[in-house]
Image 1 (cartoon, helix red, strand yellow):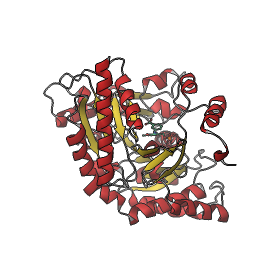
Image 2 (cartoon, helix red, strand yellow):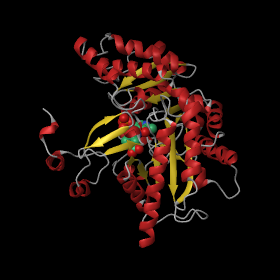
Image 3 (cartoon, protein in one colour):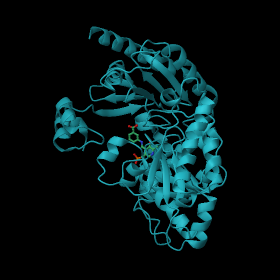
Image 4 (tube, helix red, strand yellow):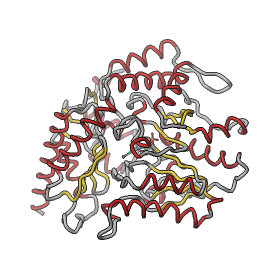
Length: 459
Ligand code: PXG
C-alpha cells in the first residue's frame, strides 16, 4: 500500500475525514488542510509538493542523527526478521534491551545504572511517578508522596504527565489531576528576574522556591522534585548555572528525590550525553525517550539511580507496573545502533566543542540584533528567539503568540521549519548540523523576521 497512488488533495481529504491530530484545533486544521511530509534525508524534510525544508526541530526534538540512516532501517529489519516481538514480563528477556541497558548505564551519570522501558516519554514519567511513590512506601513513609514540579513544565500528555506538567491550558481540560503535585516558579530570567538582579542570584531565588514548597508541605510529606534541565516545550528556558546545583543541595538537605526529565535534553542535545552532566548534578531518576532512537522507533527509558533501585530490588517484591512494549526488541535494536552512530561520528563532542558554540555565536550575531528580537539564547543545539514589539521594555505583540506564528509561517515558506510556542521561536536541530547548516538556518530565519516586520508595519 503506497501513498504515491494518492494526490496531495486526496490525502488531505482523507486526513480531514478520519484523523484526529495531537494538540490541534481540528476545525481549523480541516479548513486549512494538513502539510503532508512524505520523505526526508539528512537535515531536510520534503512535503508532498516536493518542497525541501531544513528541519530546525529534528522532527519533534528527536531525530538527532538526521534522516535517511540506512543503518537504523537495517537494524530494525534484521531484528524484525529474527524476533519481531517478545515480552520482558514473566522472567523473560530478549537480547537487545539487555545490551541497551548496559550501554545506557555506561553513558548515564554516576550512580544511575538501571533502566525501565516504555514506548514514550509520557509512559516513562508515569513509571517515574509510580516508582518514587512506591520507593517511599517501601521505606515505610507512604505519606512522603508529594511531588514538586514547575509552572510551564512539560512532562507528557497522559493523566500523570499532564498533572506533573505545569501547563494551565492542559490542566483545564484534565477534569482532575493526580493529587499531591504542586508547581513552583520556573527559572526563566528573561521574564522573571527582578530589575538589577543578576542571573546567578535569580537562579538561587528560583531554587529557593523549591525549598519554600518543601517547607510549606513539611519535608516528611515531599517525595521528589521533577524538572526538565532545560525546559523544552515551555520555550527553551535555560536556567542560570546556579540553579541546578542549588536545587540538588536543597533536595539533599530535606531528603527529597531529584527527578530529571531529559526527554528532550538526553542523548547529546546540550553537548553531553545527558544535561545532568552539563549542569553537574546527580539525579535519582532520568526520564529519556525521543533521541534514544533518534525517533526512528518509539522507545523510552527511565534511568533509575542506585538508591531507588536498591530498595526496589531488596524490599520491593513485585512492582505491579509495566507495558506490553517495555523493552521492545526492535526499538531497542534501533536505539543500540543509534547510539553506536552517535559515538562513531562523535556527535556529542561536536555539539560541545564546535557546532554548539558556533550556533550560539551565529544566533547572537545574525538574529540577536533584529528589531523584533528581545533575546536569543541557546545551549548545545537547543535555542530560542524571543519575539517582541519593543526590545527595551520587552513588550509583546497582541494577540499573544500571533507575531511568532507569522515568523514561523514565513520561515517555512523560506524553507526553514521551526516551532513557535507563545512568542518564542524554538530551534532544536539534528546534531548532524554543520557550521554551513547553521549559516543556512540563520539566513532563512533572518529573512523570515524581515518579512514579518514588513507585514507588521503594513498593519
Ligand atoms: N517530557 C518532556 C520533557 C517532553 O518534552 C514528554 C515528556 C512526553 O513524551 P511523549 O513521548 O509522551 O510525547 C515530552 C514530549 C512540543 C512538543 O510541542 C514536545 C513534546 C511532545 C510533543 C510536542 O514542543 N515533548
